[in-house]
Length: 198
Image (cartoon, rainbow, N blue to C red; front, side, top):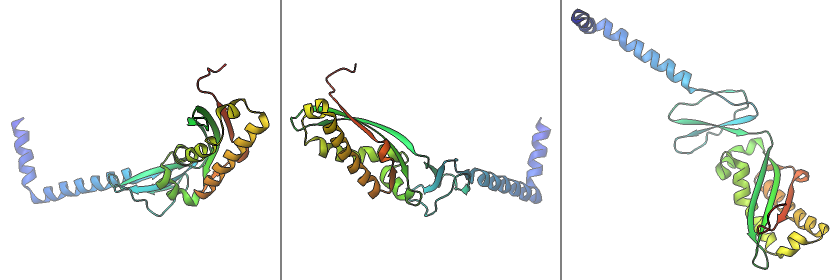
């Protein structure tokens, strides 16, 4: 065993062997870096590249496209293009100071060319981010104009008109933020949180 170690030490002292070992190390490191840099965009998504400082590159990559992202420097972000159905349930204060539970179900989809801005504003889960930041404000503004009894026990026409008002406000906010919403598939319901479901 000692003779093998001695032969290895002698082999390392030869300058040509040191150069060959350095070439092998650099070559393997370069190939490994190139392989780890190749990222494929998931089908049904668009790809964005974010650097370690949080800045996005100005390119949008199509699904299935191969992208080079330097490891430890860049991060590949897949943003879903397929419409996503989001359920949002939250309690709001009514005109009479009581809580009403608003249940919203909608289908959202980003506009492709605006995905970097949508990512900056709402993050990768743009649907949840949009509903929490924008729709919450619109729902609170509308709900505070009505009493709990009007929203929960009111006539079907009245509740539908309030839901349509909310739906059109949310659709306007979606339009402003370049997010498509299926307005005809949006459902909004009002429940009393103190009464158990039947």
